[in-house]
Image 1 (tube, rainbow, N blue to C red):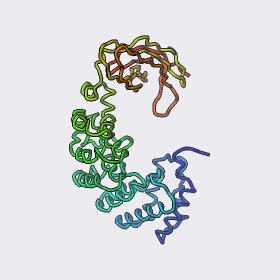
Image 2: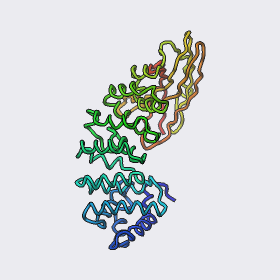
Image 3: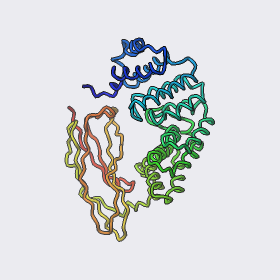
Image 4: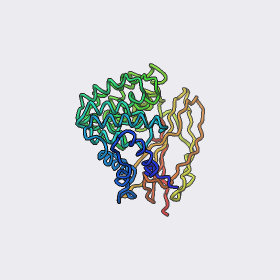
Length: 369
């Protein structure tokens, strides 16, 4: 049996969907719908293409008037939930896509749909063209959403407005100037839902990549107010911390890396087979007279196709180290074959980073197949 995500769109799924649509649309023809879905290109369509294809086909069966179509989508979601489909069902992402494709000129009807269905099929991707087309109206709407009773709607405000939401349309104006979205984040920083607070942190982390001073200013203002908010702030500053940003490190009271020593750094596998694991060890000591808060990381410098190196930082641990204490670290880094990164055989490098400062760096060789 296939486990590919695209196979969520199975014949069984469309048969069940068709039965529900028949109960809502008197003129709906299941046979014609299925013929259009399973066209000559179906087997070659990947997950997103199957989603887009489904919304295009549905457009031929939904009312031509978008206001009426919006009401059908709301009724459809209500009925699907009543029939046992779970919230956050990935296969129903074609519903927000439908609104994005066909509702952009119908602001009020689209907003009503987003608010109603986002708990069932998240709408953070679909709202972004609306932000571009109606920036002021959407900010006002999202501020209103921050006070909604449903955590999914509140999260839609923070997640949908992220300047760099992964796999989504970017919001270049917010990358240049994130000020319009800051009131949303202010309203949600103490949200009772961790699901929402995590989204606020992700939004701030996005902002830090283009406007680090904005994230640091908010982090400095928010930290120390609540334990939950402190966790939000820490997650929001993760990119800055990995970059060793001095202000971010001071904010979280990490000690002076010059007071800490890395000894006995050993790359235990100087040659690593493709698909195997790099193994290394080191000792971290605090020879000073004061207790140190320590952030322990390592940097892996991957060889690129052009012969240059591209670094990525991985966190190992955080510790409070008393004077004279020693931390022994043994670690593995797997070079498993994955679709999101291509490995090139040759010389790579590994470093140990303490409180944002690279202390030691050595090379190892990744062997080809």
